[in-house]
Length: 237
Ligand SMILES: *[C@@H]1O[C@H](CO)[C@@H](O)[C@H](O)[C@H]1NC(C)=O
Ligand SMILES: *[C@@H]1O[C@H](CO)[C@@H](O)[C@H](O)[C@H]1NC(C)=O
Ligand SMILES: *[C@@H]1O[C@H](CO)[C@@H](O)[C@H](O)[C@H]1NC(C)=O
Image 1 (tube, rainbow, N blue to C red):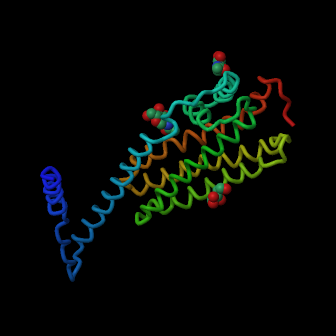
Image 2 (cartoon, rainbow, N blue to C red; image 1 turned 180 degrees about the horizontal axis):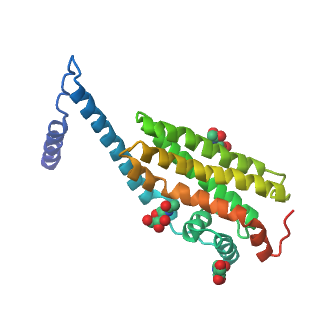
């Protein structure tokens, strides 16, 4: 009984110490100095929010987790496919984490890479939408929406009846064009932020690291698709 009261006593301390102070009353006239410091504050809040999300994403990303028991065949196929990319480690880790097939073919691996790119771009878009009070990031919202829709178009182009091969020579060309635009869209977002002298540019750059790598991986896979198939002695349809 005494120990319960003791604990309750401790409990009582918290609400008071944690209580927020009264928010300051808004001024009637907003001087330009106040407006400027409000902008600086907002920028800081945005930067901090992005920084917090960076921390979250680097600690929770699937990239960080170990691939689950992967068959030797799946592992070696994914490694061979990812070997054509500029970021083979990020390619291998992200795809092998998502892969559920004991024997994925290069086309299935490419599909997974599109899913990974789309998911990461969507995460980024959601993040930008939470900080859309910054005019510089508003342009990024439309560029990211466009990038996602290009990756979506690519994924839709690959939807075929089970057993059928989706990637014909013509589709490879189209998809290569779309993914290439998705990569450019992200660069355009960063360039825009840099041009506007946005203080968020460094935070956005590191936040965009994975989506840039993932879309670059998808682009490298589709651009080298014929060569990849050759390695497995599979003809391109
Ligand atoms: C990756 O490609 C390089 C040549 O570009 C080759 O030497 C290496 O053996 C390849 N690795 C795998 C795992 O295929
Ligand atoms: C992309 O596809 C996903 C899943 O199919 C969908 O939820 C999303 O709205 C699409 N986004 C765009 C921009 O087309
Ligand atoms: C992402 O970050 C890593 C580690 O800093 C770096 O090596 C890599 O080049 C970055 N990727 C992109 C696309 O900037």
